[in-house]
Length: 143
Image (cartoon, rainbow, N blue to C red; front, side, top):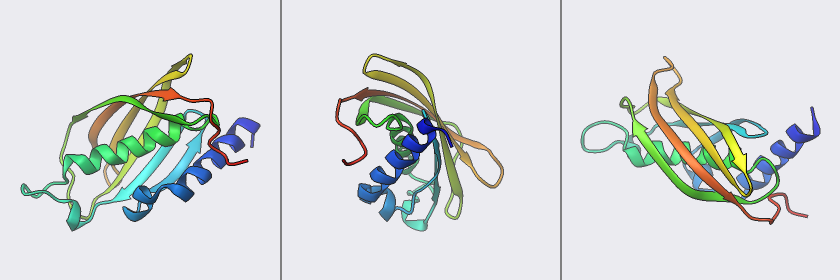
């Protein structure tokens, strides 16, 4: 494992330890590497809206979580400066969703990340998300 991969893994572990939102929703950080992350969430009945589909806020939250872990892989606290989502297909109670975040570019203290949310069972795209991050000089990994 490279030093950069080890830093990314340690950043994810440090973040997840304090990430009560992801923990309580059962979001798993399934993979992390420099500028990349995969988050996985099983959809429950509590996440379904009045139309019988997963509420878009939960899909956004999963994508935002993958984005957060991807942009925090360099041991500098990064937060969202902007984000938007396009919902492509519905998800349902019982689905397992995977969010794949990939860094597109970093410049100065900013970065742009794309996240694709897919249904795990058939790889159907549920949503496409783009986030812009802003970093601070604060380390992610506690010293």
